[in-house]
Image (cartoon, rainbow, N blue to C red; front, side, top):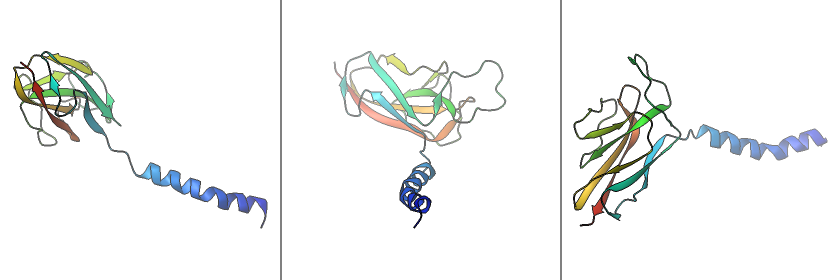
Length: 141
């Protein structure tokens, strides 16, 4: 067997592993870096948002006619569930918009158990598939 063919056969598993890894298509994801689900916290609650495989970016100025693929910004709701994909996230009705690309926020919450729902919306504030996460925190008195 010649050297080139031997090297090609040795490299084949490495190439195949790379193809499998690339073709798995890492999906975008969203989470709370802080607080953790089930945490006991004090008000104001400090939150850090995290996203994978999507770019968090400020909403462009002016009238938005098209959305930028692979980009979005955070929205937070208190004691509210995730919305269906492709729905406009309402402004000022249970949802806080972070259209400047913010990745952290503080919010006042009353003592007791609260659901925090984090969603990524596109440039038109439409919900995006799989980009919503709800956790529960207990706010100490």
